Length: 432
Ligand code: CAP
Ligand code: MG
Image (tube, rainbow, N blue to C red; front, side, top):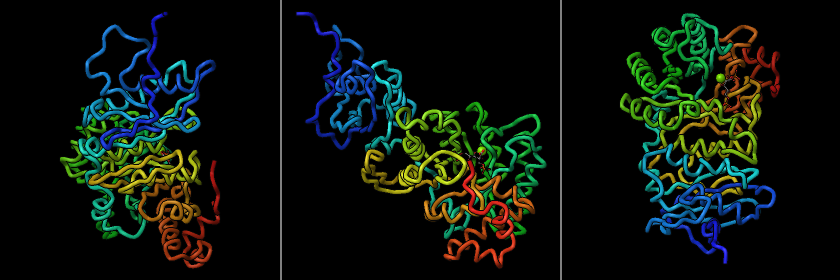
C-alpha cells in the first residue's frame, strides 16, 4: 500500500466537546475546485495550529495534545477549538500568526474569513484591557448622559499647527469634547507634532476656562514604536488624557507597548482603524471588524472606530451593532454566524466610535443605532456648516439634545438657529 501523504483529516473530530480553556474560532470557508469540504477544513485547523502539508517521520510527544480540532461544521462555517497551550499569553501578534496567518494563502481555499474568536478567561487575563474604560473616560469628562463628541479639522492635511489649534478651539467652544487628528496627520513639515501639541494644550486650557467643561484631544502619535513612546510622553506633559494610534498600520505589538506606556501615564487610547477595509470589506474573505475590535479591547484601547451604518463608509447596521456589543458588553452570547460567546470578566468596556460622513441630520440615527455609550465623530459635518465650525458643533450638540429629549430635529430647529442652518444645508442626507 502507498504511504499516506497527508494527515489533514486528523484535525477534524465532530464529537469533540471544547474545553473551557480552549480558544475557539469561527471561520467561513469556500474550498477551491477539486477540494472536498473536509480537505478544506482539515487544512484550516492544521495550518493555524500544529500541522504541515505532509505526514512526518517524527512528531513531538506533545503533538496530540496541542492539535486544533474542527468540531462543528454548518454549511460553509466551521468552528475550530485550539488548546490554550498553543498560545503565548500576553502576545497578540503570536495569536494572529496562528489563527489569522498562513491559512489565508492556502491554494485549497478560494475564500476564508475569520469571523470571531472566543477567548478563554485565562488568556484574556494576560492582557491589560482598557486602562480607564467607558466609565473612567466618562468620569474624566463628567459626561454621563450623551455620547462623547469629537471632530477632525478638515481638510485632512494642510493646516499648520497654529491653524489646527485655532480650529480645535472653535470645535471645543461649540460644545465638543474632543478634537481629533486625522489618520494621516502625524508630524509633517507643515504641522509638526510637538508644536501642535503645545498649541493645542494652550487652546484647550483656554476653552476649558471659557466653557467650564473638560476638553481633550485625540492626537495621533502613530510612528515607529520608540517615537510613539516619546510622543505619548509629550502628550502627557501637556496634560492630555488621550492619545490616538492607527492600530492596524502600527500593529498589535506596538499597541501593546503603548498600552503599557500610556497606562503608566494614566492615559487612554483611541484606536483609528485605517486600512481595516483591506481585510474586512469582502464578506467572504479576510478578517471581520468585530474580530479586530475584540483584539483591541483585549489589548486595551478605550475607543475604536466601528462605522456609522448611515454615513459615507461601508458597514451595515448589524455589523456596527455587533462591533458595539463586542466592545461594550460583559457577557456576549453566540449570535447567528456573526458572534461567538464571550465572557470578559474584569476587562473594562470600550467605546465604539461612529465616524465617516456624519452631520447633525444623522445624529438621531446614530443614537438609535448605538444608544448613548459611544463616541460620535462629526468633522466635515460641522466644518461645512454655513457659519463655520463653532456653529456646526453647536448644531450637532443641539441635535443630540433634541434626540435625547425625543423632540424631532425639525421641531427643535425652530428655536435653535445653528441646527436649522445645518438642516437647510444637509437635511437627512446619507452621503456616499
Ligand atoms: C471622518 C474621517 C475618519 C473616518 C474613518 C475621515 O471624517 O476623519 O477617518 O470616518 O472611518 O477621514 O473620513 P468626516 P471609520 O467626519 O468628515 O467624514 O470610522 O469608518 O474607520
Ligand atoms: Mg479621518
